[in-house]
Length: 303
Image (cartoon, rainbow, N blue to C red; front, top):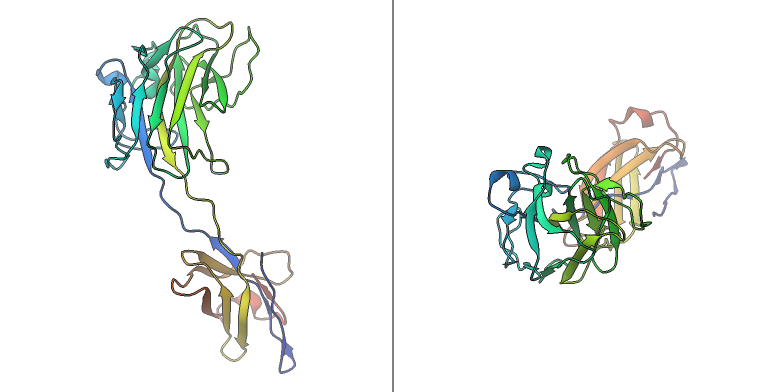
């Protein structure tokens, strides 16, 4: 991850220095939050901030089609939502579900139900959180994006968010009690501009289930940063000034850490060093006179 640099100056060792990446630029996720309701009564609507990805400006709708869905900032996007013909909207029992996406949604009572499609998704990388619900008598349902399938047993009397990770199901058993599934991740994001979510009862299951809503969450592009390499290093023992130049990427933030034994790297001598925007190298002068842990050390290592 780094390259060490050291040399003799006037009979004494210049400390060995290493520069390490401190953090990458953080891009705020864009979030679209959608709640399927059967009627516009308040207990079927989501108000304020809610969700696995906490967000405001939930869209509460029972429409079969909606275009240019708004994000959490209230700005229109290109995303369109289409419910296939015959999709049924309904509510579910249990006052604890009030005000959450699980209170109502797209109901189903069979193994195959009309799906919904999200199209013109503008994000290069994203994930979708699907909110799952149903009646207490339903012991197992499935939801799929065509590549991954998850199973759940509805939490009919609780809106505490619990993710399902169950990807297989044995007929006649109860699925795990949960109320949301996630398609896509930072490591393996979704990338298609259109996605169809299908759902229904698991094999042999009975009762009724439902899809309460969804969130589309944009994800940052995978990092392409170059590992930093020390280019120049100098140390003035009189002023205790350390000067480092290393390869850097615009938009990145770096830190310099020190160690006296090559095992404990908890000593930060400089933090939050922004890379130069107009160059592929960054130079920083660091005053070590205020670092008492290094005063009596003949040789220190920095990273």
